Length: 636
Image 1 (cartoon, rainbow, N blue to C red):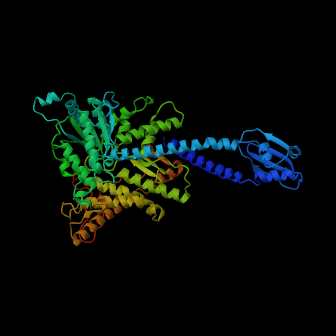
Image 2 (tube, helix red, strand yellow):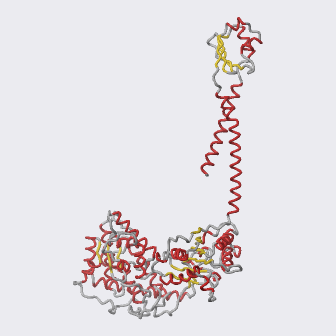
Image 3 (tube, helix red, strand yellow):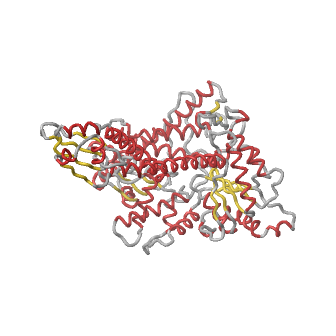
């Protein structure tokens, strides 16, 4: 429609331009060279050889060929002969002149006669279009406060609980909501109140939106979907108006479900913005609070909201009566990942040797979105290799693609950089293999992948929900293995270990300030992280300790890192022969799997005891904490 309006305006402009040109040309032609009386006078003087009549235009050709042809116009009511006779031209003088009459169509006059009413019609059409656009603009202004929620009919569900895996407890909680929507009288008879809202909390990709759709599909009721950011606009009052309109539409289709994705966009704590109580976002939140638990809310409308930031939501929004239930969707364990793999591999041709249980154990920390991407990447790799079935090779390679990115075999690497990468990754692998609390080494490669020049893949045997101090200490040594290997083998320090050093620093500082894993410092948390408005969550850390405590924290962090560094150096010094052998093999074949790597420890160097006492690196006042200290449970 907009394209038609654009071409319509262009046509009007062209028509007006043509009309202007033709009008100017018509006026120019009306300014003739001679009057008809002058033509009669020249005929009397025998100067004219020929007269050509074309409509009302008379062309005069002289006997003297050097004179140019001139034009004149006669009156339309009479012929040329009659007008010449009126000016005294005799028949003998008239017979001495050749008179030709051209009875063709005057296309210019005909075009002007047609264009005149056409221009009027085009002008009227233009005015009609302008008037209608003005009406649409007024209508759009009136519709500006309408909700942008998309409604899905629940009669033909596309997602049910059978399409959701790895969240059994969450499905059990939401199953009661489905029963409320299907059979509300069953609960009303017992005095139970239908829950007003359900808050889905979980990391990105854990399936919050999918689970909300499954609730709608199971209940068979209408489903209104909207994002929290779609409420707020730059105009005051629009967000509150859209909330009122959304709940009004939902009440008409009761019982139904309203799903608000990323509710933290409008549900953040009030009183923290620069606009005070008149902030548009806060007005929108106030309207949501009223609609969820206010007068006239006794309807079968359940609000399901999703967020991965429950810590920033307003307390009034979180209280019972508004969001009565909080369903936490955690990262799936190994059984949950296997169930999710079964869901996403439906309809995909898998090779008989594919073991989804083994693949689930190789994907710790993966959420549903990661697993879906993993299966899709495996199918793409199989199609690229012209295979009819998806095999273990594609699935295992897709795990690394999701974690690290695609391989970059075309990257040009100098021999010195190749040698550096080989020793770096060999150092990681050897230390990780020898430290008892590190995860088993699964693969070592010097092929660049993603942003890494090479990588060492270690995967846990089972999922960990708590991490001990011994595990952290061994991880510090594992992370420093590449840096120490470069120093021992090449006698040089490079920037290749920058990300490892960043990880080491973060682990050590968190051990001291977050997890209380220091024998010298008190078992307490140092520094409270708070989110500051417009600055982000990481820039608002409240420092609730003195400068002397900060100095002690720095000393403890440095002590942990230096002790781990010395431990790693002692390990690689003792296993220097193995380090050279692994690095040379990597430079030869580029990649070592778990079995090939373990063969280097079947003989050669003497066994290494990572728990043997070693000289601690201290600040001169206290000894370093023993690596084998009692584990302290904490969130992973």
